Each structure stands twice: as C-alpha cells, then as structure tokens.
Length: 308
Ligand SMILES: *Cc1c(COP(=O)(O)O)cnc(C)c1O
Image (cartoon, rainbow, N blue to C red; front, side, top):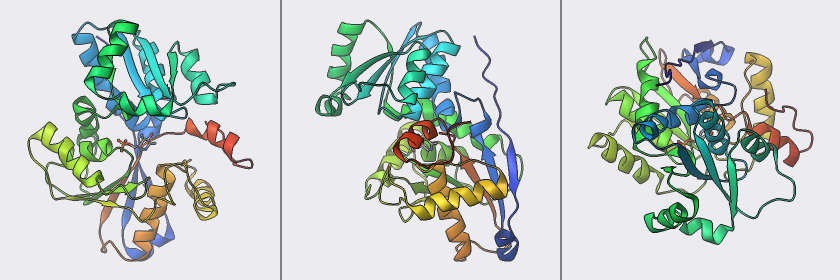
C-alpha cells in the first residue's frame, strides 16, 4: 500500500478590507499538496486509487476535456502509484498537443480522442462496456473525478482544520467538491460554492444527489452562488484578471481564472457588501488547478503567469 497522508497548510490572509469588516479569512492551500497531483483532484482520486488497488485493477480509465485539471492529475497520480492510465479526451485530436495533454502523455497516459457527439454519450454503463472490450479491463473514474470515493476524499478537508470557523467556500464545477465539504461538515457551519458555470440550475440537485448517495441524507447548510461565473466556464474578464494580479501582489498566492479566481473574487465582493457578520471566520479552499495556466497563456496572450 502507498502512503496517503498528505496534509495541506492553512494560511491566514491579511487585508485591510477584512479588518474593516471584522472578518477573518483563511486559505486552505490544497494547491500545495503536490506540484502535479494537487488540489481537489488529488482529494477526489485518493480513494479511487485505493479502491482500484483493492479490486486488483492495474489500469485507470477516465474522461476529460483537453485542458482538464483532472486528466493532468490522474496521469500524474497513476504514474506515481504505478497504474497504467487511459484518458478519453473530448474533441478531435489536435495537430499539436497543448501543455496539459503533453504532460499527460509524458506521464505515460494513453490518450484517445473522441468527437464531442460520441463523447456526450459515453457516460452510461453500456458505453463503458464497449471501451472495456476494446481496451481491456480498467477501473473507471468519471469525468472530473466525481463519485462516491471522491466525496469521501474531499470530506477529509474538514477534519484537517483544527480551529473554529463558521463559513467555508469553494469553487464549483461538477459539485463533487462542495458535496464532499458538506458531508465533512456534518450539519455544522455553512458552505458556499461559487459556480464557474452559468445557468446550471441543476447543480444544487446534483450536490444533494451526491450527498444522498454518500451519506443517505441531504443537508441544508450550503448554497451555490451563481453571480461570479463571469459568463461561463472558460470565460474571463479584465476585472477578474486584474483581481488575480492584485491578489498575487498582496498575498503572493497564484489563482487561476477558471475556478479559484472566480471564488476569491466572489468572496471579496460578498465581504465588501456585508454578506458576513463581524467575527465571522471564513475558510476558502484553494482547489489548485494551476497547471491550466500554461494552456491559458496560449489562449490569452499577455497572461502573466505560466504554471509554477
Ligand atoms: C475541477 C476543479 C474544481 C471543480 O470541482 P468540482 O468537484 O467538479 O465541483 C474546482 N477548482 C479546481 C481548481 C478544479 O480543478
């Protein structure tokens, strides 16, 4: 068995705005878990890899987009723990691999490209069986890594925080990370998820469904905020980029514009608008994702940070 005891530090953020409003904000640095296998993607993979071992599977197969943090982390973790890995990538094979795919291939991940229409149908069990016939047996991890084992892994964040707080905030994509946090809170405190996607009215239902599956109950102590998605998943704005620059200058912490930047922008805005009360203690999860900055730099010339 391999060693699975990685903790991430908690950092107090100092800001005159927080002093003025009487709140304390801490950053849980899951981006520092590991340079390649970082953030919520590691938390979500951890028990999946253990389960794969227990089932004596030596191949991990998963799905993701061409810039996916999940593909990147899975490729690195699979190599680290000596699994064969297969990535089914959404879209046509590019003439030149982007940095995420280049990295995944360098970790030994076998990449198969699938047109978007086929990819969309690939999530049901019949399709997984077809892949199994073609590629051999494997342990299946869904897109984004969200499943029962992911919720279990993410829920451990809560037990790593050994002081009192009343709010915890996280970015939201599939909702797996938020579900894990709410499961870990076990009815205490309040969790706020900041959605990176717009118009995902079903996200709350999805989180509830994950909680039902994992815990056999849902919880009322969370909400999802849709006001800071900046128009959708890979969209951004000059206000967001400017905010990420300022945050780096002030705290020496790098955020990315898809998830953590939007969450932190939203958190600052809520604090500014007196959403929180004096004395509130807020934990923000830095869910990682910094590898994506490489690809981001290709898309947005002038983007200042490449990864690490
Ligand atoms: C994938 C990802 C998320 C979204 O997590 P979900 O569990 O899908 O909601 C948030 N932040 C980062 C950095 C990610 O890579």
